[in-house]
Image (tube, rainbow, N blue to C red; front, side):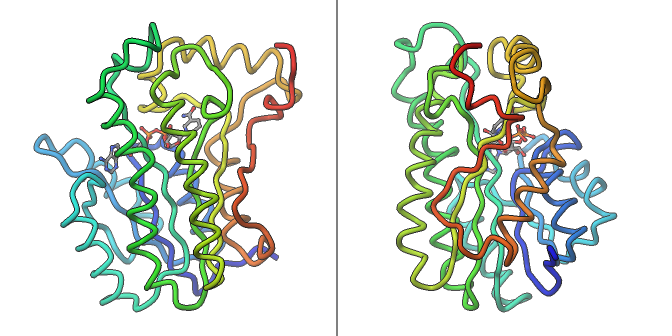
Length: 259
Ligand SMILES: NC(=O)c1ccc[n+]([C@@H]2O[C@H](COP(=O)([O-])OP(=O)(O)OC[C@H]3O[C@@H](n4cnc5c(N)ncnc54)[C@H](O)[C@@H]3O)[C@@H](O)[C@H]2O)c1
């Protein structure tokens, strides 16, 4: 039985009701986890109110601002977890960012600043959040991040995010190797394309989705809740022997040699 009762889970990356992190948060809640939710704070307050209203039915016991480019906010987030929860069991890293200019057109035009930004937010952040989580995962734990096929194959327009996802997937392996000694498992979910705020910045996302719908074995793409189910599984004792892996939740698209 998939049961996360008594587990403290921090979920990052909810922007709205299309977010993959929202699908994950709902399934972790359904499995009984106690949730902490972070949102991206900004001067325009784009997310705080919207996300707070969205997650209310899941009764999160923590709701905190956390921009992964802000070291003080990361520190404050994990200090609050230590003070309020004492222990962390689950960390969901479900965020990424790149300039729109670097998500279409010629790959070779990616700027150094655009490269650094994408890698910092989308890949380095997993290292930083895992380092902060490590001392709090005193009874073992599970860390799950979100990746995409564009990190291992060339997908038109994915460009700088492809490099970021390649780095992220390698982070999963190195972190799994280090944290396994304290029974913390680290895995990635490689999700099929889903329409979200972040994916709308990738050039030609509609074409990518309709292509997957035509050629994936299941003849469709996946939903946020299906990704959430896989995340809940990876965070549960049912996955106690699984670490350092990338699990494809993509309606089977990854196996196809000709599309
Ligand atoms: N949508 C897809 O097709 C798809 C497929 C595979 C993987 N993914 C991955 O899933 C994850 C979630 O993306 P999504 O598609 O749900 O889009 P989304 O826009 O709903 O989520 C992206 C999140 O990243 C957050 N974020 C951006 N910069 C941040 C920062 N500096 N600090 C903290 N948070 C920040 C945003 O606030 C947002 O909540 C990403 O890693 C994305 O690459 C998405």
